[in-house]
Image 1 (cartoon, rainbow, N blue to C red):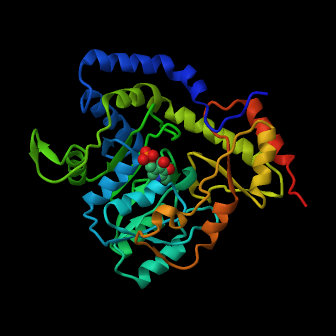
Image 2 (image 1 turned 90 degrees about the vertical axis):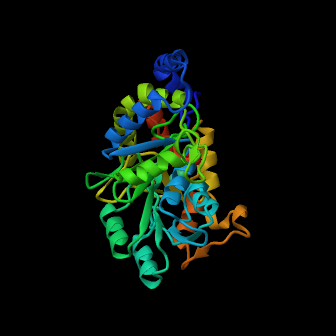
Image 3 (image 1 turned 180 degrees about the vertical axis):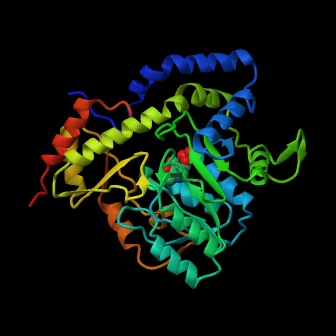
Length: 372
Ligand SMILES: Cc1ncc(COP(=O)(O)O)c(C=O)c1O
């Protein structure tokens, strides 16, 4: 029995390998390997795809978040309202700058609870920064995010690592914050063959500062205006993304949406709750999360059918060992987030998934029953 994988990189390679090799050849032959024409071209293509005026390639999604907050002058001790349920990098970006994450519970879908966020911000005008995450490929309500930003005079960076191509009422995620950050980690919808990330914005001044900061804070060769990073997307990854991956992204997203639609219709097991995006949110279907009362049993059942599963995320960020001794605040109970951390299972979803594999997943999920 062929396993059904969470991501099938070998199958992806058979689809894009020839173009990747051509892109590599082009970079090699150009003799220019860092911050050259390939990065410029990819940044321009990505900005056009996203509908924003500026995209700046960096070394990872983590760096994109960190540099974005530095550009907004996040200082040591500044508090940032954010979610306890995300990749650890979301919080790491805050902490590495000396900021203090303030956690608020999620909604039933695992995204930041905007009602609670609003009450917290109303009660504590000292919180000036907001870091929402469009988790699983679902978009948070962008109108509400924009409203919070304006009402409370916030500096907001949207974490779009999982949401490239996702929309709220026709608007792209990442378009309401001062800046957006995304990741090209291989499992992402726009995945490189290695690490990479980007900061996006409509603000030319902020973009110029991001460009400086990613390259040692240089404004001209050997002229350093501020302490920056070495966080440059390299020419190889930029060429691969521009030639082999980005041109496929719309079709791949559509394919993910077809898989999600098939799962949504096909999964009819009352013991399995499917986390679908709310009305208004068009998901780019980065992950397909469900929740069950007995996760280990469900995962073991799928494993016997040769179906891989993931957990996003099994430990809440404030519960991580690394947070012991790190300054953070928790506002209210993190009840929903905690429940999701204990019950969420991600089913395989990727553009190379075949029809018979989708059927296998649906059948296996429907044939599972909770043990007595
Ligand atoms: C929501 C979220 N934020 C940030 C990151 C960090 O991206 P990277 O792995 O490229 O540093 C990731 C990816 O792991 C992510 O899923």
